[in-house]
Length: 495
Image (cartoon, rainbow, N blue to C red; front, side):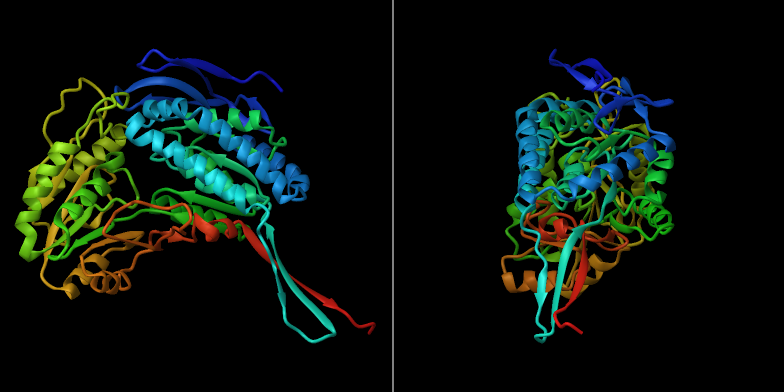
């Protein structure tokens, strides 16, 4: 194997590490004709440049995956599991470094945010490794003259595109189930935060995976991503990102009718009934919008509070956010929020804050000047007295901005919550478990949290309704999503 294309990079702490910057194709590091600058969102400076895959590079990666699939699909499930567990061990051993990388290029607080993400990635690898020898078919009852069976088989070559807000964690949601089911992969990182996935590629190599089984590239969505979606020799594509891009992915994938899994945007409502434990509701409402600086597809960016406790909730919610959620260096252990990912996202979020003020919402906190001389910093922002026609209520902002509205009855709460084109997640707070579950069953969302928010479990399927996507990830369903069913009819007679 050729020596990796890499660059020595130093964290603000002084620790240095070797950062791969090439394309990992067929078990080797390659250059391409173009590069992408990776920007540190904390200061707006270039960290390094990475090679950007062109269409020809995607073709090479797909060809390598197709060749590897011939033998990978025949490998026993327990052997695939052994490799995956070995990879999980390596990731666990390097977790703090990988968390530092995501603090650097994604702006995540290293210890309160990035490190739990990496630990979760380790868990997903181990969970899916456990499934590798447990993907069964069925025997269908029939008469004595025929044997009817079905079995689940891998798709073949799958392409995967991951977002910038959870660079490695979202990659593991896709890589782990695809590998355990026997597929070979071409995966593209986000151009905004590609470094942790490239570092992970070196761990894949060290774990001893066969050449071509897992190919990891960086590149622009309009070039590499579009080719991955339209490629005639790709059997399935999985994408996490905006609804706008998800629509385009689905169109491109129709060229060969490849299977598509999409996890797209959200505008999740959090409903607080007047019998809720107020401190509990406030804690989770803040966590669900301020964690990861609000850059979460399931962020509860709409909070609906029953009118009888509306004023009390706002007062206590404001105090809780001011005390617990504040921006700071991603490498400072005290920081609970980092910067937003880049200048474009910064301008988008600031634009929505201005729209909120212009459209008549009351700004409680937020939009204050920051003390940092550079970077893309936005304070926690709370709007109240919001109405359904406001942009901050209708649109996905993807930043630390929450819009709070009031409701009177259970019926009104459900109506307001469902009044959105999205359907990724929803949250309900009530001491009455009957009320909570009754409301949950009427919410048009793929995931509903009762008395919590965004505390996912890798064993539970995750997916969206409406414009939030199609298909499921995580859990048994997430593993089986990387298989297709083959039916076999066996004639047991001599005729």
